[in-house]
Length: 421
Ligand SMILES: *Cc1c(COP(=O)(O)O)cnc(C)c1O
Image: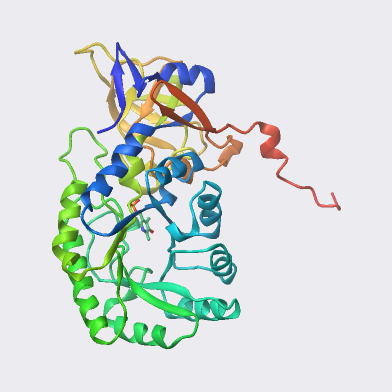
């Protein structure tokens, strides 16, 4: 459920007209709903009620500080994957002891940065990383709390580019090697083993892969405890999928997911962390764009928008589907016609949809890409020297620009000309 609905024939974000925002901000822009963000966070929080838990929002899905602060005020922690994300979370007001650090390529500088700034835990992805954390922590006279991310070798049944829990993926250490790695961790200075981490992929639309993975984690917990390790925290990752079309069957609900967690690992008495990203912000954001031209091609009509692949890369990168709806509600029973919906960038990959049935649209009309909140704005670039797409947050009858559109000078003045030119 989200808060982007037609009201009196026009699309609203909560109680604000999308047309009014477009008139004030210009297009294209991302638009998020506070009520939807809040609701999605609370679904997870409630799903884990009764267990000691923390919902650590995977901020790589959408990392604007206004979004982070909205969630942090509700009690969210953050899952970060870079020093930059860590700095952003701290700037948004999230304390270090609510931030977990994931990622396969943590550098010495990043490890030092978060140890000095304060961190809840490292989710360690390899033995070399473990040794570097030990070295850096020791040199600072600190102890690094760690979990080891185990790769349970289960098929997440999702798009190949976002599956992470099979043995061929670069993530984590094979679960079969876990006891060895924990033995090494326990012997290293500057390391405190506190738990286990697992994350098997993104946009999972079935619970079964989680069930398989979490059962393996439960078994491993008991083994590691028998080996003498303290396993008091389980980080169970993120990845729960969202509906990208109005019509398809609904993916599992956070409440079912929470019940699964209780069933598979609840008896272990561990503190539970989860790291949802997409489900919190995906359907809490839309991308609003304007039709520049309607162009008659051979046997097809192109809808050329002012938004492009640099603003929303998911269709080009993951063959992703986004529902695209007119901001002015079509009359009931209005005729539909097929359009190829494209952006202005000089790449054939700059195609959002082919043969998409839409009511007749004209130059100047506004459209909204639904479910664009996750992996949208954060993956945007300035390819073709198109200004980085702005972001807007709605709350009730208010809205605010939370990242403004840079002007051309801001963009081009980032270049510097060497002295010999
Ligand atoms: C990307 C990622 C997540 C979030 O995945 P979603 O599908 O957005 O929920 C969580 N944990 C880790 C380690 C990740 O890399």
